[in-house]
Amino acid sequence: MSKDIKVGVIGISRGMSFAHGAALAGMKFVALCDKWEERLMSAEVGDDVARYTDYNEFLRHDMDAVVLANYFHEHAPFAIKALRSGKHVLSETMCNATLSEGVELCQAVEDTGLIYMLAENYPYTKFNQELRRIYKSGELGRATYAEGEYNHPMSAHARNEISQGRYHWRNWLPPSYYCTHALAPLIYITELMPKSVVCLSIPAPEVAKGTMIVGDKGYAALCQMENDAVFRLFGLSLPGHSNFYRIHGTKGAAEILRGPGYFGPEQIRVWHEPWNMPPDQPEERVYVPSWPERGELAEKAGHGGGDFWTEFYFAEAIRTKTQPFLDVYRGVAMSSLGILAWRSALSGGMPQQIPDFKDKSDRKKYENDNINPFPVPGEKEHALYPSVHGKYTPSAEDEAAARSVWEKQGFLGE
Image 1 (cartoon, rainbow, N blue to C red):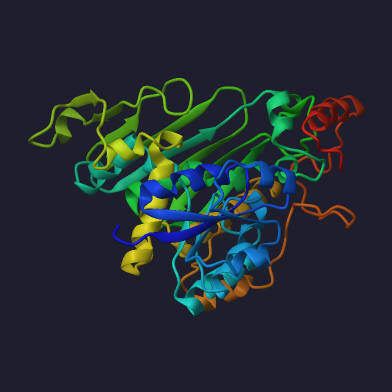
Image 2 (image 1 turned 90 degrees about the horizontal axis):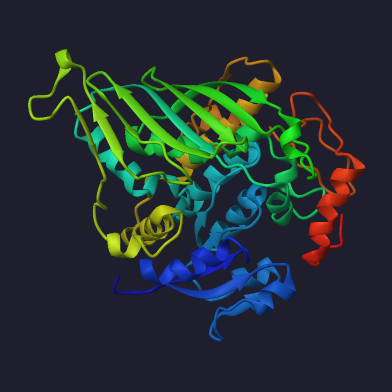
């Protein structure tokens, strides 16, 4: 960390976590961009940080890298433009909202040779790093089955606070699109890639009363991995908060013990059958894991320390000129799995094949696949709806409840 990496952040809300955490990873936060000018100018970032409402002007600032914390479904165009302007990119949550964007993003990384990383923080919690250590030690054998859950319910009021406007992406989100919090830790632990997915949707419209949400509220998916293991994924906003990960192998199993909130009791359980015991381990053990390193820095960051590690590994990748584990190919594959899982749900659970985005001939098949559920104000709505029941219109009472929250925040638009 002898030389600071100058980094700019786009996105005034979630982006502030990255902005304030940059120094922990040896990066220098130098510029902030957001189109909401009032919030941008009131942000507490110091006089030495430049502020921009125009993304093109922002990219001309003297900096090495860009962190994208803008709207969930808009990352790919911003990432591609940043890469082609000579900036490394750290992009949060969903790499691409369409398969064609995934193809174009992979091509941009290959053309520029710059670092691209998916800022998926859940693999880097203390307990998921411990599950990775256990798995890589060989104690569990080859992965045969795994479970990943990210289910985050919210009150109607809280949901409205982060979903301003009838066209906000959160109101139109197919639930499987938000799959990386469930899937990424399992891929990080096992280093396996998905090859197909089947999915069913959970509509539960009553969960969204008092909001403008028109998408379904949950999903359950089964992913066939490259070694024929099956990974089960579950989420997204059904009552009953859950963050849970489990791995079954040919020699044993390990899981995170369930508990309240995001991370529960942070205990790991590892167990074996009596007839399949490793010589140096008990039949079952339960314990609180430690950080592998840099725990004092991770404890200062959000999402169970995961926010620190995403920026740390991003900075390390830039310095070593080596693509990170969560590179463009893994990121686009996971994001595309969410897209294809939704198509499976709309077809009643028909299997969907996941492209190999490293293979140019395979991904070329999808370069014109622009199917997209997110509408644009003033334009014709897309045919792909975020509910298996088709188009849903919130009631007048739902809209009034949502607008009362938005108006208090200063949002008066559509």
